[in-house]
Length: 187
Image 1 (cartoon, rainbow, N blue to C red):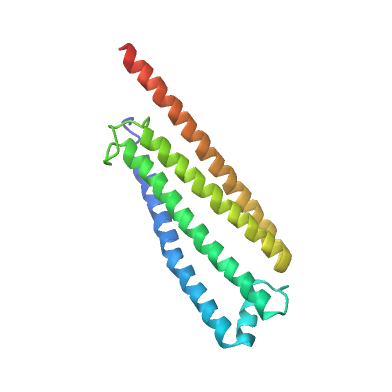
Image 2: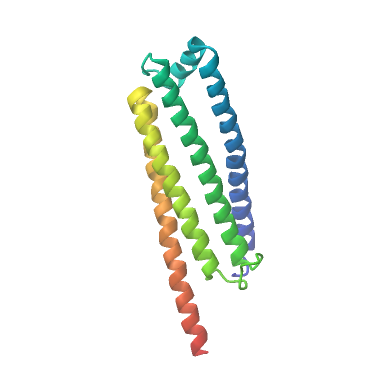
């Protein structure tokens, strides 16, 4: 790695670690909410419907439909949070691998097969989680607040673009590996 960029890499790595931890905390929190909703479904229909109406104001009055909608919402939230945590983890590992600090690293260079794998995995996680968020935006548009759904959709499309950029970056790294191998062969 280029001398002088260590400070920037350190801050970026720490920020990615913070995002990873926050998403990691979000997974058990959403699991707790999911269990709470399951208990709510089994205990009191009126209170459960009140909570459901808060999340999805235009939800049907059927407790069965509300239960299915809320469970889909919770399961998708847990999955999106877990995928986001994985993406942040993989992006953080790119910095460690580039610095030569992981077992899979071949030295202090960003052009490594492990970085290509990590970037592709992070891009895949981001894309899948954002597709789930776009589906949630559709649910929110159909049963909830349309203004929030449009905002959520715009955010998801932005992050979907970020995921595609990560995939492109992986291809650039793969090309960089090839160039480095060609350059090393000439020397």
